[in-house]
Image (cartoon, rainbow, N blue to C red; front, side):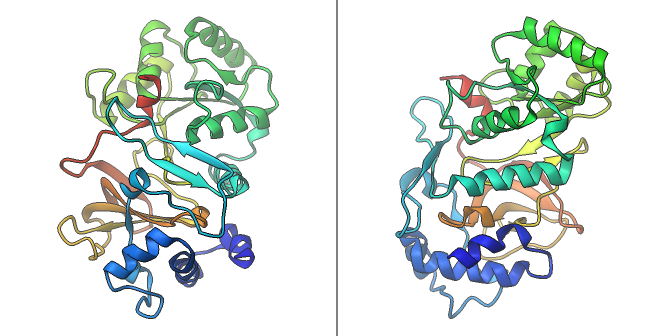
Length: 327
């Protein structure tokens, strides 16, 4: 276990499959519900010879089961947002330091040193939503920045506007991270021309405003903030890693995370590049829960390993970070 732990963030393309088989073996032996799922498909370390042979646990299991290695005790439980009557997902995290390493190293890979930025979050504060993995990440990045302007601003648009103007004047590197509807609400109330600002949206529109496509959201936000592109963060309660898009809707994942697509009608059939399918996720930071997850998203993986999220499989439940502020 300790040897696996130490390898997660040094995995490379050339070692990915070998490490995936090691993680699969560990989780098969130690995560009871995952082992039962694999056995129902007649899959085991003896029969799994490559990544495409590994069973991907349906993401809905995070709603109905406690998914954690039998030799572990949770340090933290992250919980998804949901509308009334919708069962939330719960991620039982045995080692919070793995999550912190994952999001810090992932951020550094795509954006550099967090101490160079001011982080402004249009999200519920950590006090309000301490069981949200996204809010937890934002809170830690705000702390790491060491800048007094960093903080949560969901219910204080006027103060956020003043801070943005001051940061623009100082030419301070700044990231505005928020749920899409809150970014739209702010941009409609306060127009600002801040070309250097990184505006990063974290989710869709369902349940709060008229449904818009990602392209429509980005078009409005670019005009509202005076920027040429809108960044996006891809994460889930059930994951301990994030992928990022820097404006073209195509996400890049860190080396310890990989996206595959599966046939919608044959879940054990993995698709090729540039074909639309249901999204399977591999996240080695999920070492003590399950690293192999079958989601209800539709997507496409490009030849360079990046990916797009194109929608939801029919009849999939509503989900998304925007639901955090509906409760």
